[in-house]
Every structure is written in C-alpha cells, then in structure tokens.
Image (cartoon, rainbow, N blue to C red; front, side, top):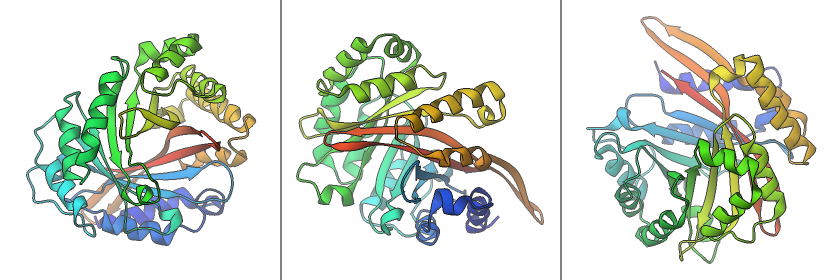
Length: 330
C-alpha cells in the first residue's frame, strides 16, 4: 500500500474527535513533509509523535528505519543527503544482530525539516558499532566522549541509543552526543528502594549535583512496573551535562489491560500533580488504535499507541513531561 496514504490514515485516526487541537496543534503539514523525506526501503518506517503534556499543543516527528528493511540494499532517504545518506549506507551494511533502527528526528514544531537529528538504536554491547555510526554521521569528535561515558557508567546499564543533533548544536558552544541507557530490572528496583544508589550511579557519569526534584521523579518512574530508561547529553570530556531525562515504556497490550492502565494513570496523575502536565493526558487512551487497512489485494495492520512517558530536568530550566505516540504498520 502507498506509504504516505497509510501515514495519513494513522495521523487522522490519532487526531480525530478533537484530539488534534488538544494534542497535536498545527504541525501536521510540516510533519507530513518530514515523513516524505524519511522514506527508505520498501516498508513504512516506524513513527513517533513527540507531544508535550502542558502548554500550547505541538509535536515533533521521529521516523525509524528498521535494519531488516534496508539491509543488503543501496538504501537512500527520499530527501536527505550528506551525512544522513552516509549514516544510512553504513547502517544498511552492518552485520546482522548488531543494529536495530536508524532514526531521523525532526523539530517539526519549529518548522525545520532540513536538519534532523540522526540516531542509532543498537542490538548489542559492541562499542565499535556506535563508534562506527559516529564516524558515518560526521561526528568522529564524539567517539572518545562516547567511549569514556560507557566505560564510566554502571556495568548493568545498556547503552541502547546514540544520537547527534546538528541543528541544535549550532546554537551551543560545546558539542555533545546523546546517549540513552536501559537500566535493567535489578537496578530499577534498587533505585526505587534507595535514593543513595541512584545518586552514586549518576555521580559516576558526572551528575553528582543533580537536584532532588530529579531524583524524586526518577524514583517515581522506577517504582512503576514499566521499564526505566535514562538519557543524557554527554560533553567533550565524556561526562553528562546538567540535563537528564527519564522515561518508562508501555506496550500496546497494556492499554487494553485494566491493571496496567491503572498503573499508567497513576503515573499520569503524579505527573500532573507535579505541575508537569495538565489534563490533556486523559486523551491518550483514545489514541491506542489497532486497525487492518485493506485496499484491493494489499493490506497492512496499523497500530498506534502511547509508548513512552518521558520526564526531563535541566539545570536552570523548568522540568517538563512528554509522551511519545508510536505508529507501526506491518
């Protein structure tokens, strides 16, 4: 089926019944252009809508290309050349079971489709894989900071993601690379039980002075039954800059399970009570959609659901909360 038609249907279903004005704002036209520029290989990319939980509604768009859809091909993004093309060519040539997805992330809320971030999601712990990505993405200067960070972080953490943000870094004096880590069940339980363990582990990677508001928020997420991830901006010396994000991930079936929905709602109420969200999160349950699309002999199963709640704290700035809606087509 035509991939843009499938995307249009997915967006229309997620945004219908007044949800566009509450959750999405007026970003749909520029986001559609970003989608067109992100097509590579024969399959529909996985899409994430990044939506704030308070303030004026808007969304940024993330397009994730699977390794299986481009491996063994001369893959090219429909509208991105330069380092983006180099990163995709490198990604498509990697050995099996080393990489999972390559993402383009657009600041569509700012009207920018020309300078997306590019990010790699890996399958294993071989440090040479993200280092090769940084070369291909035009950031060889970030290789040593990456290596220093992963050597310093707690051994149980899994650095699942590395990303570079060319446009954002043009406005900042010090270059950085973004690294996201899955903390694992054992440490998630430890952080929920003991704030000191969390403080010590954050100090290992340069965040010894993180505020108590962030510690409390991370521990609240850690107490939930959902997997915890921590995200950092890592500076030239390999230590985390004074900004941290923490997220938990939901599965699509959890939106159909009453016990899981109760746990999700607890987190959302807590987020609202902290002043990080208004009541727009109530609309999220209605964006969980499973639908079979059929056109002649062609068909695709479409799935849309809220996949992440993410909290972010920055020194000198307000905390914020976002949710990420995921769209899958198979």
